[in-house]
Length: 309
Image (cartoon, rainbow, N blue to C red; front, side):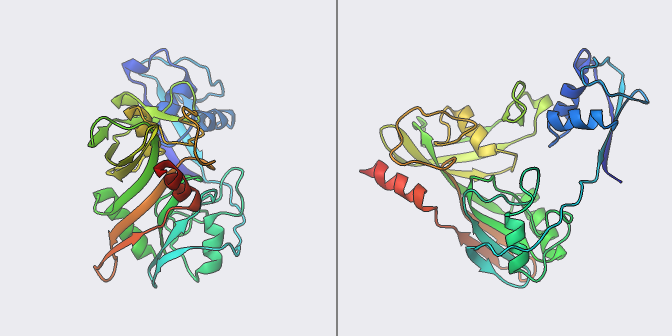
């Protein structure tokens, strides 16, 4: 079975590009390595013929068809993993996801995920995102902690998803950065797409190769080498805050992908010092505004205490 099918015409600016690179750039949320695997599997046709050569050069007007098959089912099993539940009712729950916990099963993470924990905690979860991501309305990176809303019913899932798309759901993060911006507040409006050389990373790219992304920021505290910033998301792209922080010139401390040690850290960190601090949305059935604050993890608080000394 095919979960997605793309029928694409190569524009003039695509002429001369490799097939795998071009597809990786124009198909959202599909990495170049995934494209290469699909090419090997015969899921790509060039001008009507199966093409298994990833480095074929394209010409303007070429027709490229890409089929993305349904994911191979992973046997999901409930696992008793402690959850920090911040809010819960019959329609949804909000958890404070710890650092190191993957949200849903995937390559290299068939078990031990938030989904496995939710299956043990809840009698039911929404099925809109398929069997592998029950209840998952939005994601947090593995090493980003904080508030994450989970839908128990399809009705709640659709309502929450619509709020995120309409920007009525509010998501606020705390992040510790290297150095501090000169201004007290500002906005980064810069499209995000796959890094042109490192396909495991995202980057600020040209509008034609990325997706619109907006992050509002405010300086809360500063120290000689670091600053505490508040980030408010207007969009929700992969690694958005981490990439926009680099674009701002002040990467998130401890980020293993987008920053390197510029100063000696007062506390050892496991991953980036980024925390989904506050989450607010309209309840799908009652219409009540639900506002939840997730306490930062201990290492985040220790860092702040040491920096303040």
